[in-house]
Length: 117
Image 1: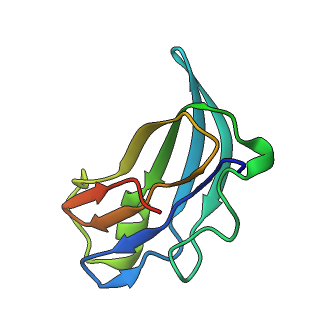
Image 2: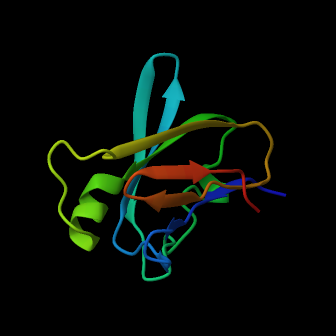
């Protein structure tokens, strides 16, 4: 089986998928971060394709950066600056060639993630 990475974002405050949220994928090598891809979630809160497809998969350390502040500014009531949540980085390792799914559950004042399926 080839490895690949998917993600999705759910807006738990609104009870909806988080459409239009920018996500960046970085590969981490030592102290260096290499931007691999920048995507935006669709109406289902998912990316239109695997964020890291099998042809590009390599074991290693990665980081997803969810641009939550811009999304929350567009979808919710205005907050006094600085916003409580802005960029949400999630750094994780992928060691085996399998399906990795890293979702984000988001609200204006908190978030959670897990290794999904």
